Length: 228
Image (cartoon, rainbow, N blue to C red; front, side, top):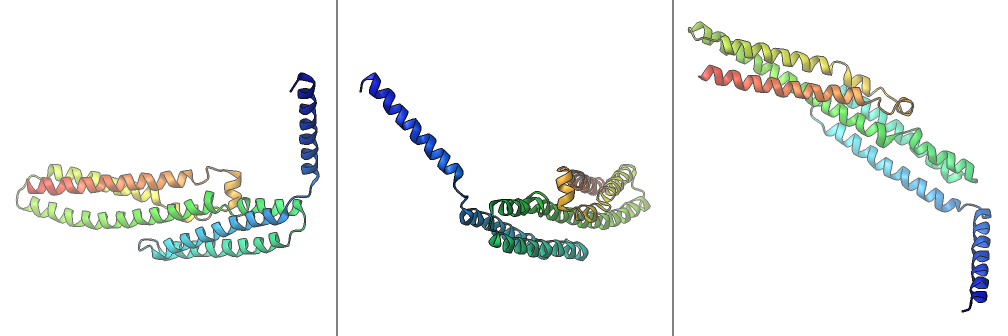
């Protein structure tokens, strides 16, 4: 092909592309495809909500109050998403459909807020159970220390370790105080305003778990000291 024909062919190709782009831009959106995509997103979130509810009801450590709160959150979200799906199915224009589809995330925040909320609650209550168990162990160890002291054994080190153990338990309790109740109270609007709203709760539960592990280490050290 010579230069004249090449230029001519390029011109025809460019004109065709521009015409196609113009036609595509002017064409009405495929509402059916968009609706199907949004409904699929709702379905995925409904499955996730069922999973969260299942984890809550299956947990042996979660308190009844926290389980009830989670079940309530899940039920409300499922009902809200079902209603939103009905609205999406009835949308007749792109603007309304777009707004309703955006609401799937902005009004419910199933992955960004609700999922971590449940996980924090599970971890927090599990750690609280750990605090209670180590507290019971500490009571038995104190009795053992007192008994050893009564026989004339030097319990200076064991007593110091017990003080550390109690300090770690106190720190764990302080870290957990009110955390789960507080974090379960956050709403999608709270997350929309502050994406880090759950960070303090996660850090508090993590700190409490670290303190419980330290208390357990103290307990083991006390046992070793008493056996020495």
